[in-house]
Image (cartoon, rainbow, N blue to C red; front, side, top):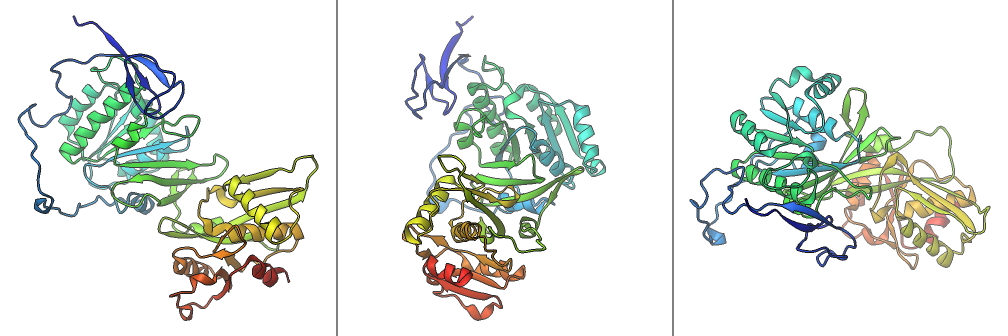
Length: 459
């Protein structure tokens, strides 16, 4: 019997070393190496293979000789899911879905499989029993629609592939990749080597049979997907399912997508009978107010190809302690501090001794710079206690010198504001190039300095 060997793997990037290292030479992370028992059989065949080993020889092909045909995507009944994937499920693709515990990853995938018509689906669960999955399926009130969905509670990849060969499913879902283990690797499930080996076996199966595979993955306390970083490089698409437990809305965000845009998102509402698609997120992100309140503005942002109007709330108050507080929910605190410095330096507002709190309504995380103007207007509105009309929205970036900078795809932002009944929208005058204002009934106000905005709104 061959001697058992061990090696050290970096938990961050999967780098392998013969001895323990304090700092990983690949990703420069400290104290990430763990020891794992490995076994490398000399002539072991892969768990999934279509042709015998060595029977196929790959030769280089000139790029102009390669015949490309458009992939026939599998369009699901879930329009939000289709948008995030780039138009539907691509045959042979490997998709990884990550998210916090209890956020609804298993609910999302089970609801998707139950609503897929005329499709044989294999749902592999290593965390729940068949009875638990059946209870969830009945709670989703779609049990009658899932007649061709098969549940397999198994963690061994060898047994899973035996059932796949017998069933020949058209879609495979694995919940979760951290619970699987391969007999070729002598380490515990969820370790770096096991996750990498199990993913590689599923990747070979997906590519050789053109069967799409979805992997549900755990995340660490830092919010990153658990396992080696190479896991995200191996798959075709990485989706992040996120949200706040105190809000009913969930966001499915594409982090990586080889078959579409990597900046799309889909919005769902968590209900008692499952997840409901939110086709018009602007309406749910805008609160209906009976009276005008200071510190609240509306900004036109873009997430991928989707325009959305969001509500920005700011509160400025006198500091009761020696050091003023700066807190932002859903927005980068460092960028908020930069905007506060611009207001102090360029406009003369004394905010250095004030507490400033910022909140993006609806639990969204915003990275679009077009919300800058709406944020500084909300801050000044709260500081001066002067409300801004709820029929006015903003779509501009603010520079360090106080100038109003242009943003991309301004036509979509204006059209969305007009559709929701807004009367005015403030944009940069540098966005007017090539913009046909006669197509819109909304009043478009072009500004170049933040002083012009304050003069128009607050006098």
